[in-house]
Length: 201
Image (tube, helix red, strand yellow):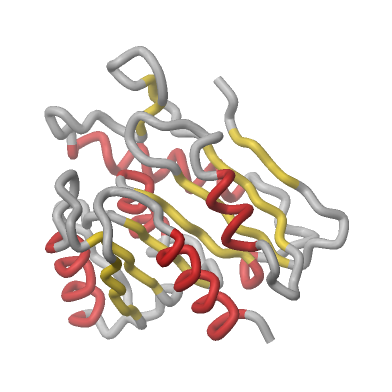
């Protein structure tokens, strides 16, 4: 199994960490990461992390079983991912220059990791909150994205995440885009604009 794929740049001053969805692997979000950071004035290193468990279909990976949901595996999955992310070399590009982005199941994992690691910002796309998820007031800014025609993970899941975040006084916002359980050009443009506006000087 490929633990992670890293697209390095000697001139990189920022890092984007990607967490893929259920049944995908570390290769899945790389084109999205390249498109997202293309044209930004600051150079990015892109790191795409592969989930540890094989997908039951025989191809792809999963962070934990989803059908049926095995929520009891979530805490160990989160601890394992936290350990792996902390093992990344943060010396040259520190956490306050590192952004985390997850899609679907990877987005749910990103929401969890945001309560444990102080990333500069977190993007959770087409995601959902785990049962008993408890964000803290001082977690990084979280930007939620969801297709308004998503039939895999209903948009209400991201609305629930937003409600929980705002209740806990966390900085967060939700952007609904035209589309389903997918990554669209509109979504990429909005994400890139948010990175420029919020995080790049």
